[in-house]
Length: 294
Image (cartoon, rainbow, N blue to C red; front, side, top):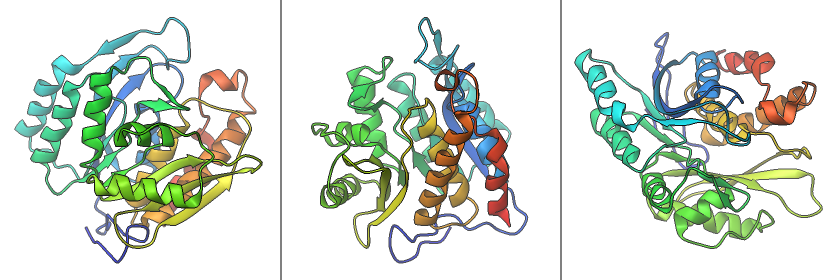
């Protein structure tokens, strides 16, 4: 693993020849709706990674549907991961997303202790558009906020950033200076590198993401805005970001790739029946992820 000058141009993982890195993907498993592990496994596998799932919950579908079912897997995780220790599994990155209970933060910290050299990637999946997701209690939000401060790479949207910082959500129309302040504030709490997502200003047709850390340059990465919302775009973005990082791209390059991939996948999705329910149709574009290897 190599660090260079600033957060935005840091290379956080250096591929070593033909070695296939292993990523512990600590996310829920969603039966319908294409998010979480249903995204992380194919995207990271396409980048030549060995994805080792750690399921934080089982969902019948994403929570945008009525009548969804959730099974909390907290009680099985200690035995599940102890079995990994028993067979000597090595992990190069720990990538966490949606959590089912506050106790799962301790499970992730256990992975950090077991694999101290692993890259710590936290996508603090808990809220968007000013609203907390229905399964998230105040205790779970606080636990996620604490975990966020331990990340090597933290990828919050503006709502999640506000929760982590204990601030009021001010919408998506914020200035460059305010976005940079948020990045610095998150880094000051402990996150080494931050990718702040989803700045969109009134009258503009672009989405801005800001990449940086406590020191050095903060880079703005833009992509075209599409006028519809799909469940799972955050999972696709974070998985593509990590896929690019694990192929040796800088964090700014990874953010640019992830934004472009999500944009293109949303266009593909719009051609599918009931596309606003079924999630992001990214499958035809996985060749773009594989191309990162070459």
